[in-house]
Image (cartoon, rainbow, N blue to C red):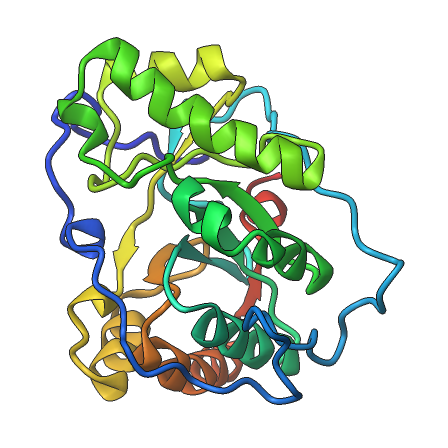
Length: 261
């Protein structure tokens, strides 16, 4: 049985999403990057003209409204990425996941999609899933209702324009748990669930790849939903040993929808 997030109404800031810093030095993905930095899809992706369809919001009766963990008796985990930052660094990370046969969930910031619109299709063409992480990555739980709703629907509109749907998931910005108000607004915008996590990699603080690897592998368990970030070179470097460590434990990285349905 999935666990609903505690302190739903707390709206406390989570360290994993408290800062929107990104590395300034882009990481080159394998293959030649395009002019906008999105690069070529890695192994296992579909060729141009055969793009995967975007998933609509995941609907699963019986699941809690706010999800932070999947079934603990399986052999899967979900690696979820707050989506913003340098496109080449993001593309490098997606390529590392694809080389290992892993699939991830990217929660995109709407302003990032405005700047890097091709990244939406790059995520989907790699077999990953795409969701909503608000339009401007503000402290959504501190906003008035109309402002918070605009943050949710603003990103949803970008996703719909780029992919045909509003995305599989909504994750609130600058907080681990949504308040009751933000949860209600997300449902009104079309998202049945709010996506939290039980493992914070702390990679947004740029502690270095070994520290990110250690934090994730020390805390991850079957069914875990792990919070990570695009746009950080240390996260790109940490991903291969993280995936190798999961493999040695008999765990596989899947999309969040696959984890919980």
